[in-house]
Length: 565
Image 1 (cartoon, rainbow, N blue to C red):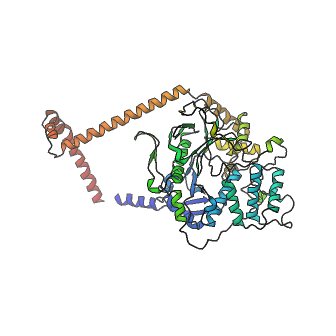
Image 2: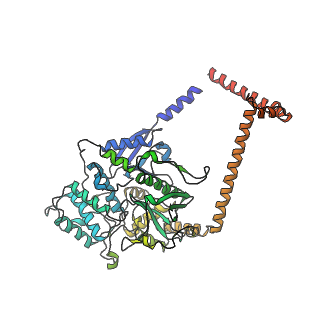
Image 3: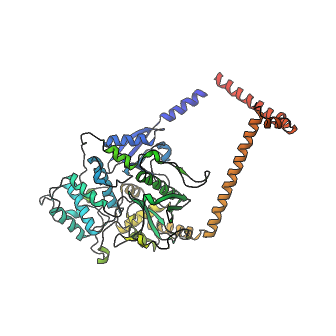
């Protein structure tokens, strides 16, 4: 029996799983891992494949069965983290944006960061006004198709490529003009470097937005950048807190707290899982950018009580250590295989976005990734998405303790239109039906889909009737939410029950410890006095001794059975 159990467990451990990782250039890397393989093993395989040494800026992202995104933790088993059926699919992405991407040591690292920021531009995470958008797109053209050649690039050639979710004819002409007249002679490496330098100056550089709501129920996007914590609402950056001013990050349920020296910011995530992901991202970013060395990293708890909440510890190196290590790299620059840019009409992963020629002039003042526009249009119809849903507004009550009555000095206008990165996949899916609703919203607005979305939409695209039914269900859920007072009472009751359970558990453990010590041979006056009492003698002979003899018999029978087999 024992041999069969051991052989079965060994076969289970030796089982290999297929993993596919989508890279930044949309190619795929496939490998096999064993069941107990840690995330670090898979990440090292990937970096070896890419010939990448400055790897601390990057990470592997995956989506769990509940459509919640996560960063792969390198100290834990890959199979246990994914919780899905193989083959596993993940994405290689920039996790920590370099504070100065132009200062990266190797060109291969700069190229990968360039690909990531290009994706950010395309999917709406990097906000651009028209002038900045034209220059960035021209840099991309120069890096990927080279100098302008009248024989190869006919009139309107820039319109065949997709840089943003939406294009206007005026913008396409501006891109072509800059590419023709200002960038001639630049090598791909030079154009990529100039692209990085320009992108670094934008307010939303390095932003991976998490959709939330403030205490008033207004939509907001929270993000962590190389320079601090950012809150974006509408067309304004309403909060920017430097990392050295952030004293604590905490979450409880769907509520996220950020503690500054004089203010506490409170926001509400769509789900508890999304809130926990937001908290873990904040802990990792603060450790990476703020600390001087990795030995200063400490395990962080989401609660002040040891028996409540989650515990998490950042396991990598910090930015200063990464830069010091990069300065010691001495090798021949690795060869870079750049993926040439393909016109959007022939590229399966990119669709040509809608032109804005029919949009009013006031809507064309800035070109950027605009998800909020589509979401707000859907909110007034039967296709409202959970991002703009009022389901949270009933429970999102003022819960901010602030030492400042007005923080208007922190407000900075970042664009003429609202910051809306939801034209692409939201960084944190917000509800069970959010993917289907967002796919339909993109079809209505003509916005592009990512690789993941296209594959899922090909399998099943919801009809209008289905989405209307989902809208009715969401509305019913919204109306069925209990009031804020009931939610506060529930939280209090849960806290009391949790405290009661922990107290009972501790008392039980102490009782067992007392019995063990009393039955032992310790010659202490306290235990001697207990042993001489009639109650102890009765307990010893009627309960403890028969129970110990029964356990001993069971153990001997099991051992003899194992020996016989």
